[in-house]
Length: 96
Image 1 (cartoon, rainbow, N blue to C red):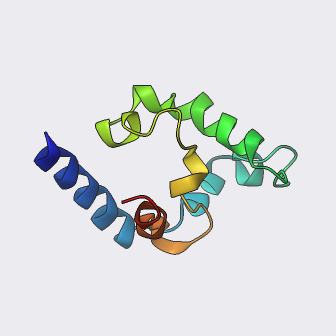
Image 2: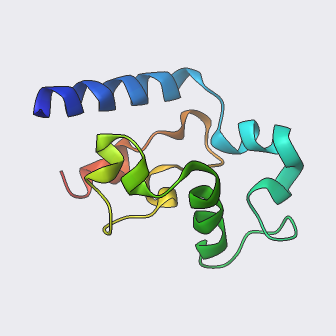
């Protein structure tokens, strides 16, 4: 099982390295309002995380890597939405 999780994480991070930012892909859909209330970021990112769950589902509904972090983290802990590549490796290093 650990090999599967490691492989999935590696694929996720390698794909993210060639992709633009999460924000770029979401603004194509509805501008800043795709993630932010009235286009403005909230101070605590609660609205933004609820928006992620509203579209993509709860962590329990996603891949095993997400399920393993249910109740411990929120989307924006790993998905650095306005940075190229959405690299979460620095967040992972905080615990692993």
